[in-house]
Image (cartoon, rainbow, N blue to C red):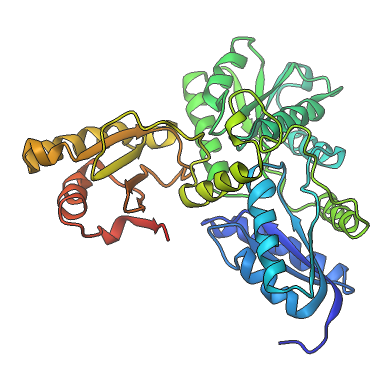
Length: 402
């Protein structure tokens, strides 16, 4: 433990990924920032899927600095920035009452990011082929259940293409909301551009970029007469470094407030009104932390059951056998037990549960056990071992709710 205590500590907060490449890119940026700002104690943390956790990083920084700023390296403000981060800061203030904790603004809609994104498209155009006026650009975002974040993304897509002379520029999403990539590709292709450039508006590499490249290959097979390229993701860039520093300095100068005029936890946005209000917002955040579903609460319209199995059948999981898994589970339940017992078990299809690229995802309630990469051939083991035998299928476990 360093004996020196400095005035300011900065924790750069990333989402976290199971793909080491994404975490390596963030940590490379943090290392550069640490070298450039020797007046700060600089560390990093992840919301999930990687270490250190936010709580651990805040505890470590509280020993080393009198004032701690968390800089969320998030493109847009959704649940992690609006709820998870404030709750983590509140808990840290309780543990370390002598330390001042505060949050910087997320990256947000900024011209530096628009320039970075355009430069990635320009890299693809420089490889030759159709000029800009015959090129359609599809800006691809992760997608969120927060309409505020999705709205900001669509604004960024507009800024990327504004005045650039492209045939057209369209926003689209990898998941959670619509339109999706395949749908937008089909729509844009009807305008018969000579080339389509898919721009992954993502900070770091990882499985989403790989999925986008697979989407591009599939489109090229269907419509080989239209050239399609995937531009590089945003990545580590001097402009990103400078914007991070701007956000940290803004927080230190009292300018690090979140824009809340269209926040779904404050404003009754159509379709999300039930999430407004302090207690409701907190409960929604806790629920999200446990389920990672980012879906609006639903009414249980079915009879009470002993075990409820949820199977993701969203696009990615469906491609990996989600629908077939549902059929196999239901068949195994019918074959493995009598009607009375079968009525205490229920298998339900769900939309995205936030584990894209790792599915099909399966969750067993009330046990709170998440399984990933479950194949239809695993249905018998899930039913007989877990549903009927109350034993975990260890090789498939992703996580267990605490």
